[in-house]
Length: 243
Image 1 (cartoon, helix red, strand yellow):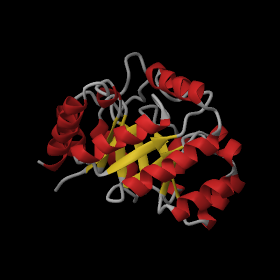
Image 2: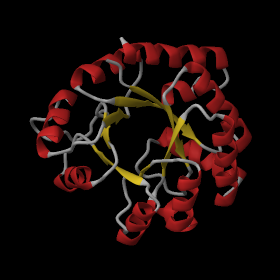
Image 3: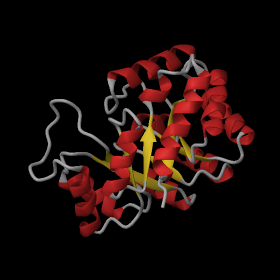
């Protein structure tokens, strides 16, 4: 049984129109869903590489209406693919939870990923629009993060592999152990893994660990100027996820 292949798209990089074209390459490669990030000013939860993409997008335009208009065009162009939104709290505050909720409902976006949203009113607003909020947890396995994953109605975003020098909670050195523990604690929604995935062999490890899907980002972003290689790599990831 296969697991879901999800490609990360830093929307607005290198431009909004080019990001839409890149989404087309993702679709051609056979991904199951696209995770669309609207760039924050302070992307502190992401790597320096991803933060630079956010900066370059915002240098083009900091008007979030431009991003929503572009995402609207993208979704209407690629009707066969599922889209998620990944939003920092600052972006949600800038746009407005009601506006985002209405946009998601109009475009059949079922999930918003936000690791730092703690605004009860915004969360309640998303629920009113039928949008599920997905939560994240990493190898620190902090109780507050685990509790949010248990309580949320969206999928859990589990860190796939720890970064060099990162704190790892003793006893949770393996992805399989982390996923097993989350299930035992009551996480019932899908667990998708992201961060630190460098090649298709990593996907096989995620599958063996019990993950339901995976996010791939940096390795494909680095091939934006080589579209044929980009499509081929996504197909390799997809093949690893299915076999």
